[in-house]
Image (cartoon, rainbow, N blue to C red; front, side):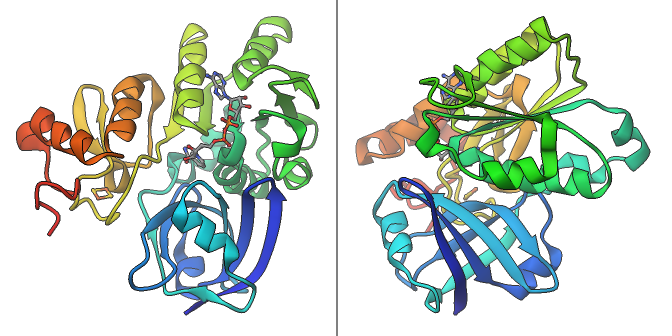
Length: 297
Ligand code: NAD
Ligand code: FES
C-alpha cells in the first residue's frame, strides 16, 4: 500500500495528497506523471506529479473530483492508501535536459490554468533551484478556485501574475488576456512558453503565443488506460502524425497539436457508440484501448 501521509482540500473539489512512494520519489522528474488505483478493481487515474521529496520518499499529487474514481479518492483518509502508485511515466520536461547556461539566457513564461497549476509548480521550482527566474501566470475561474498561490509566490515572487475570469481576485480575464497584457503593454519578450491546464485553455494559449511567435510547450492529459503505449487510449494528432501522450509526451509542441481532434476524441471516448466510431475512423492506427475492439485484452 502507498500510504497517504497528508491530505488537504485546496479549493472546492480540489485535493492535495502527499503519498509515501520512495521509489517514484527517488527517480521522478518535473513533467512526468503517475497512475494511481485505489484497489485492484479500481479505475486507473493518471495524475501529473506536483512535487516530490527524495529524502522523505514522498510524492505530492493534486486532483479534482470529477467522476466516481476521484470522488472515491477524496474519501481516502490520512493513514489509508493506494493499491497502485505506478510511475514515473511519460517523458520529463524538455527543460531539465537543456544546458543550464543556455536556460539562464532564456525568458520563459509559464501559463497555468486551474488544476494545471499543480504540474506547473515543480517545473518553476526546479528552475528556481538553479537560480533561474521565470514569469508565471495562474488563471482560475474565481478566487475560490485558485490553488497553490502561496507556494508559487514563494518561488516566483514578483514574477507571478494571478488572474480570475470574474475579476474576483488579481488581474481580470482568462490567462490569454494576461499574456496579451504582458507582451503588448508591458513590453515583455519570451523565448518559450509552457502552458498546462484544460485543453481548451491550452488551445487558446497556443493561438495567442503564435501571434507573438513564442514557441509553446503544452502538457496533454487525454484519457489514459495503461500508460505504457499499448492500449491506444491517449491517442493524439501532433504535426499530422499519431502520437500517444503516455509515451511520446505528455509534453508536445503546442503549435503542432490538433486540439480540436483531441477534444472531440475526449468526448467520443465517453460512450460505447463513440468508441465504436473511433475504431472505424482510426482504422489501422487504432490499436485498442477503446474497450470495444478487443485490442486492449
Ligand atoms: P478551468 O476551466 O477553471 O480554467 C482555468 C483557467 O484556464 C481559466 O480561469 C482561464 O484563465 C483559463 N481558460 C479556460 N478556458 C479558456 C479559454 N477558452 N481561453 C483562454 N483561457 C481559458 O480549469 P479547471 O476546471 O481547473 O480545469 C480542469 C481541467 O484541467 C480538467 O479537464 C483536467 O483534466 C485538466 N487538467 C489538465 C492538466 C494537464 O496536465 N494538462 C493537469 C491538470 C488538470
Ligand atoms: Fe497511452 Fe494506453 S494510455 S497508449
